[in-house]
Image 1 (cartoon, rainbow, N blue to C red):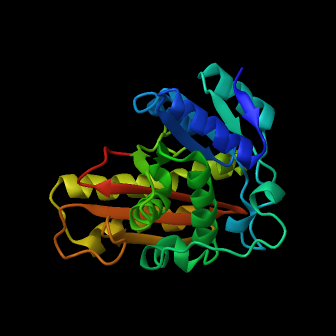
Image 2 (tube, rainbow, N blue to C red):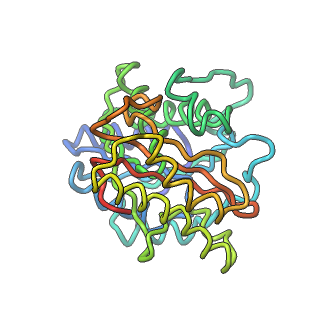
Image 3 (cartoon, rainbow, N blue to C red):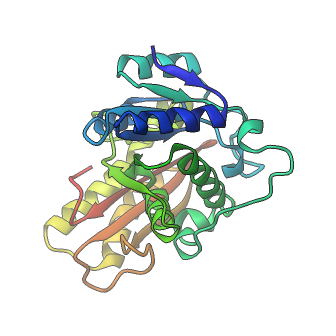
Length: 285
């Protein structure tokens, strides 16, 4: 059975003990409600490490007051069972007051990468992410950390943070795991009604249209963005953005890029979905 720790100091000591025993630590940070996407990160961790750690923590600092913190799915027992089935050595599942003790007042912020895309609609989100992940990195120590590229901006921000702050962390971005019909796996998919689940495929259709046009030689970022938007906008109740961006800076792309990020955020009812594809790099969604 995977060992469960709740106290940060105990978690730090367990990671230090693993390294002292010449074991390589692999870290998979999550907010729980684990699905095949998370499990693929655990499986990939085996290629980089032999002491696998999963953290389960619904981080209140990355939710704005109007967002879904209270209803975010919490499925700890099934999460733990999934970790055990995959041979996870250690699960760290702290309470909020253990991560943010009374008087806590420090934030970590990555400036420019946090401004576009999600940053324009969730201004508190990435400071919450970078702050909690900094704490997790500090507690874990030298390790390989694995993140899914569905949260592409998050992965780029955390990679920049680790580089800028000289953290002894190797970050690995892992491919998006999708359902058979192409919908990206997400803990929030369980909120969708049957009809909303079908409409959600508008994101997949849009990304595929942009991908196919790229494959046929289209390189105009505006044209590729418009192609994606044509399928997304009519399917969703509200669209925050359909963006064509430079995959490294997340800013405006040059006119004829060698790689291009198409990123989407849109809402069905009260459920907000995100997805992306890096044209010139990723497979067809």
